[in-house]
Image (cartoon, rainbow, N blue to C red; front, side, top):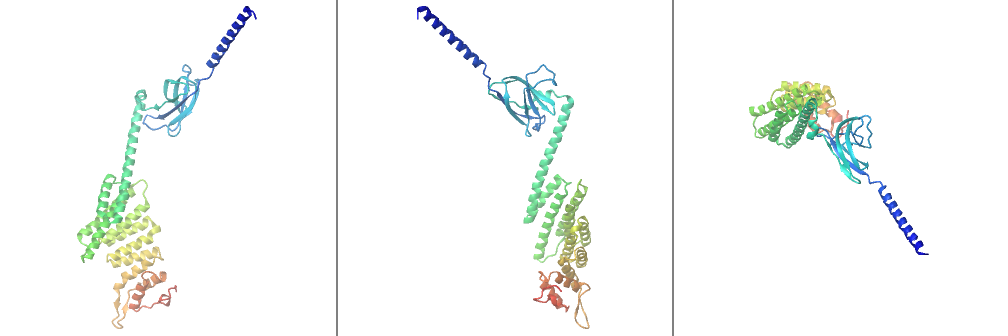
Length: 397
């Protein structure tokens, strides 16, 4: 090849290299940049997370809101969080929508290629609050106050529930002074809560019972100091009943329990008539448990030595629940002290209804915890013991 040919060949090669280089540069310039991502949180003006909404991005700032086109859209979850990707690098207007209404925005939000951009819509910020109208600010303050009141009330209730639980445990364990003190404070904080008064009454009743037991062990009677404690317990139960009645949703179980316990306190304090009235109210409040309440009345009055009232209460318990064996036993025990001796035959004569009550007890529980005692009493007063009650024959007649 001559010199001219060689020069042309070299020139063509140089041109070809230049063309390839330009083509390569052009190809690199046309490669799409990596998309950006976004993550963030949205909360309202009182600091609570938004539970719904959508974050939208646009570069169409000049268009009317209804005609505006959005390149990206990210939904907010129930915790107020949102995230997503696929955002072309650039500068955007970011708008937060709730129920298709724009509620907050940030302009000039720049996304770079491959970036995970944080963006939080915090409507408690000063810039947002300053843009609120006077009416919106008023509504916000009112809502904050109500929310603060509700939070304080819930905290108070939680504390009282904890106090109530501990006081009940203390009462059960015999720590009556601690329980009384705690429930006195609780009823001062919330005097309209019936169950708190009932718990106070339980602690006071337990304390009075403990003192009465100590007095009995020492051979002393229940004195005025102990009776005063029973009266305090009865008064607390009455306050619990009144508060429960006045509440928006009176609880029949609370009412029945309070009347039942008040009956105990009154009977042990020596007021049998008032005690009977309390047990009557317990039965009215919860008729399904009437047999139990009347039996409790009979047992309490019997233990308090008020035998006539105990027998009458036992009859009410039997009428409400004829299968309650212990009611027959208490009735018979309350009547047996009235047994007399026939001067002619020198035999013991039981008062009307006494023997029948003992026999009905045996009929219901022929092998009950008091069966042997009852059979001994019947034998002792010369009453007939039917064959079905004899030792080794516990079947019903």
